[in-house]
Image (cartoon, rainbow, N blue to C red; front, side, top):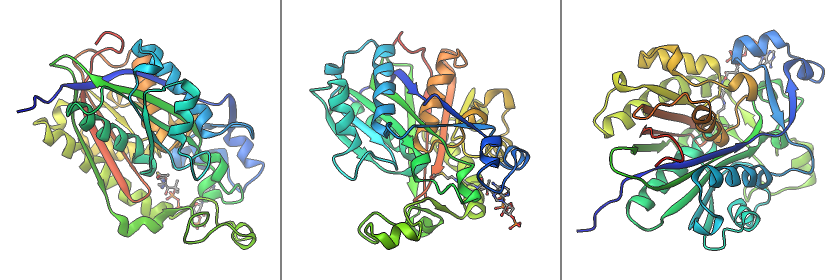
Length: 335
Ligand code: ACO
């Protein structure tokens, strides 16, 4: 019988564009206020790429930083998975562009799309592949330039999202630490709640599709909110259950950074104290699949995660999709 390997994250990295867009900046272009955005979402500012920067550019920097923290060379990566809803182009995949940029000449590469749950989907796929021995060092990246697909005349969406990229390297680690479980799910029946309608095969790009603003994010915020509040708690508990733990075992929670009210509702449901919950959405807004990836990198670099901590990652997104993971933490670079 094949012995399954023990798997964990051995390096992380992230990249944020320099340009900061504050709520006051948005007040000047759309009918909103700093006060509304802060109280209804918890966001104060977000990052925005310039016209010359694409998703792969952010992903490349995040990947190089993750390699550095894991002390690996690009040649040692054998698979790259990029999760994104904002690829550079329809094809080739953003993963192939990153492969070229970092010189990961021995890596296979593909994109995965599960909106904001995408990084957790990537982590789950990578965990299975390394555990089974199919791959050794998988670079999982969540990268987005959402500001490129936002309608800056639509106050329901343009105040919420931002740009960024986060990366993690998933490899074999010693027994006793690492990824204890992952859980992913989807419900395509409610896919219409969050979508970019045009630019695919259903509504190919045309003058009309552009005039009708169909290449921008459309969202039924209220319905997504209701779904999110329920699924965040459910998904966290499901992953805990899979590895024989309960919500009482959580030492640190890293939730998707969509809305402070969604995070607070999840915290209440899981009955954990606020100081055990990572938050950076005030600075960055919702960066879709990059949010959880950047959050792990920041939490790790800021020393918020202690060796032996039970860390729960949880997210939800368009699709609809959701995902969670339970990690027994070990400091990066010392695995
Ligand atoms: N500024 C001022 N007023 C606003 C703004 C704004 N930016 N946006 C909406 N409003 C108004 C609405 O028009 C509405 O006015 P009305 O009552 O006169 O019609 C009022 O504020 C209340 O609107 P609601 O939609 O009820 O506001 P709500 O409290 O639900 O907050 C929000 C809206 C922030 C979008 C919230 O519903 C939310 O966070 N939903 C979840 C969204 C989310 O997480 N999406 C990402 C999913 S991840 C992915 O895959 C990409």
